[in-house]
Amino acid sequence: MTRQFISIYVMASFSFFLGSFTVSNFKNYGIQSGLDETFLTSVGSYGAIFNAIRFVWSGLLDKYSYKVVYGSLLIL
Image (cartoon, rainbow, N blue to C red; front, top):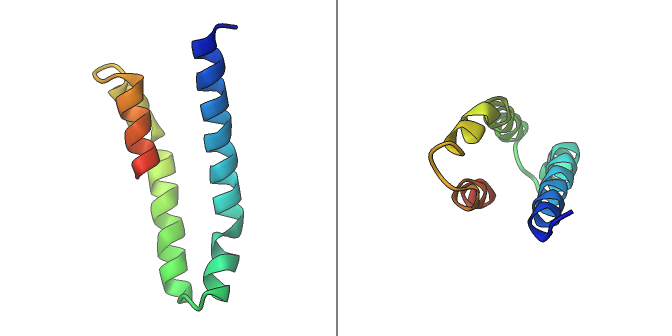
């Protein structure tokens, strides 16, 4: 129960909840905003592809620090 563990645990939890919220609401929000169904489907597909290549992000941890990899993911 170190400070570093708690910090990483909280960051991972917030990332999970943000992702779950986005996945469940992006189409509803897009339709209400007047976005095209084709565009929304494309956005969902790209999100699924990036989710499927999660192992790439974890592989980057062997070469770069956690802060750099996690910061890059948050920026994306």
